[in-house]
Image (cartoon, rainbow over all chains, first blue to last red):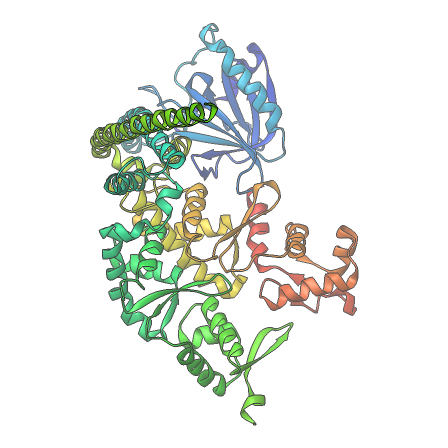
Amino acid sequence: MNRFEQLSVEAYSSILKTEENIAKQRSVGLYDGEERSPVFDRGILYLTPTNLIWIDEEDESLAIRLHLSTIILAEDQRAGSDQSSKISLHLNPPSENFSPVQVSEANHVKLSFREGGMTEFFRRLSDTLMRKRWETVVGVKPVGPPSRREMRTGISGIEKTLQAQQATVNIHISKAFEDLSNLMTMAKDTVNLTKNLVSRLKNKQGEITEDETTQLKSYLLSLGVDDPVTRDAYGNDNSYYRGLAIEVSSVMSKPLKEKGGLMTLTDVYVYVNRARGFELVSPEDLLRACRLMESLRLPTKLKVFDSGVVTLELSDLMDADVVKRTKEALDKSPLTPEMLSREFGISVVLAREMLLLAEARGAACRDESIEGLRFFPNKFVLSK
Amino acid sequence: MNRRVGIGAIDKKKLTEARFRDRGEELAADQLRQLSSQLGTLKSKVEEFAEKHKNEIRKNLEFRRQFQEMCASIGVDPLASSKGFWSEMLGVGDFYYELGVQIVEVCMATNHKNGGIMPLEELFQRVVRSRRKTSGQQLSTDDILRAIDKLKILGNGFTLIKLDRGRILVQSVPGELSLDQNQVIQVAQETACITVLDLKVKLKWQEERSKKVLQDMVSSGFAWVDLQAGVGNSDIVYWFPTLFSASFNSDATS
């Protein structure tokens, strides 16, 4: 929002009188970056060859404008996570000695079209931006110092420093964007070379030695190129995953014991990363590492339930133990998965799996009603 | 005679093939060497870049989005492994993995209330609130979606349910909604509640079908029953707590 300037009633009426009125839309709200602006929430948006002017629908004296030359790029956003369609405007850093309406970190603003009209407005805006009429229309360029609300010197002083800081940040960021795209061009070449090599290998197997294949796989992985070659059991020949498997196993042994021997992998992910604090483990790495556990004979191992739920469990845990514990809990009272999850301090997903397992082993009976799935101890078997 | 020519031809062909193979091997080995040197250069460039701009990736959401999009466009997933050099040097990994942890925590904490389905917008708000301490970092729903995408492989936990106008529900428990259940959610998304009659009018469903679907949803915790809304038995109103805040949010933003 720090590229907008305030307009007096006279100023905007003169602009609107002298400049061609290309488009107009009611009920437009502004977003400062991703933040919805509480002040500029519902107004009429005008598009002229050089300016975007926003006038509050209730208070006509509240008006701001954005010079079109500050817009780098306009994007339409039909599919936001909330309702209204939006146009987002990416902006140049503000020029020095510019007195903005509001200090802001964001380099973009959004126009939210609460009562539609976005598509039409966007079309005209893009059209106007392409013509760059402000380069030829000189007469109407910035009109003197804009009228501002009274502000104490102190505050405006602070504002100015903030602004100056902001300006340097902005320069830094645009430099960052530039560096990024250079970097990516370079990365692209490398990625292409990798893919080329991989496809050759796929067509004619065995062109390079075992060692070289391992090397290539590690390159693929480190670059983040997703390829079947990296996906198939790469972990075995990588010390990182072996190490990680051992670490996860030792970190999780205690909590696993406390929670009755098994936890969902999602919970393990949270637990392990909370324990680490930094240099977090990616979900994919965790899964790879856990897959190795069995072959490394660690005290924990991966288990996939029929439902697709993936858990980590103690290697010496027998289904019978789980069933026994579940049954003990059931003997106290009939249970829904939610209740068992509270009882054992585990996730609902897992509690459900445990109850289903108990059912399959004949230790529990289900009662399926509108109140959900509830399990009772299996008295049919016991009475025999 | 003919046969000998034939054999000779085959031998010749084999020879050529073998030569091609040799050449191919040479090329592949060459390329691998080239690749490793290129990777070395790239690595140093990324290091250089990280020194200058590491903070932007963590703090500036536009920058992050751009980075992700560029990676996608060249066919790279910077988040795949924590040992990948994007993640190691730029810290993008930690950012998203931590976000993943926070998302799981938020979902677990609200599971009992919404049956494990939450509007993306609400999830976003809650995550933002939970990470106040690391303020100074901007966050967008795009970041949330990327983090969720990574979590998917840890079992069939996270799925996205797309509603009209780009609204998205995040389901954090296993089990996909059936087609019928999905349709019910679609119809109910504006008001967050529905009756058997609504379904009859809007989807032309038989009463039995509607009842079955709704009861299933009640029993799995997605819907709540309201017996006091109407007079007759036909007026049972089914509420979807998941959609409360979605409709509340949309009131606030529209």
